[in-house]
Image 1 (spheres, rainbow, N blue to C red):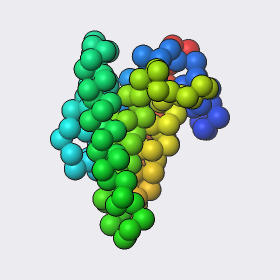
Image 2: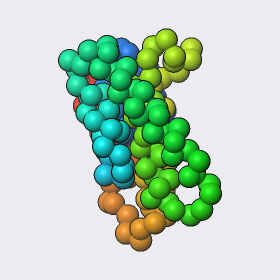
Image 3: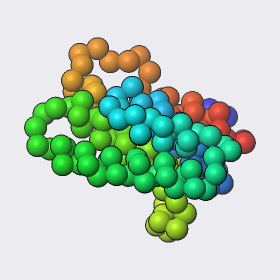
Length: 151
């Protein structure tokens, strides 16, 4: 059954087990990875989509993405370098997807958080560029979630 709105997306993501939430969230980050300037974040996203990644690999990937998101946070709002801000949001999406269970607040969904950060990255890109992609980030996320969902 196709996903056509954010309510359905959120329901689908909430039905996924934690490992599938991570992989789906990492795929959301992967869909905007072209906006990332840091190789460590790119590797973190690759680790996040790897179903066979070990706990220590996932923890290292989370730390790398989180560190870069924290480092680039100060660039947000300082000026209108939209691509620098997009870079930050890609790292934030990766960190959200890779958040360890112990650090995840109750009733929180890592894939949903990653989805929102990825959309922020796309929004920043749209501020910088005149021509928009024919498929929005939300539509890409609906398609990715449909692929990941067992329904």
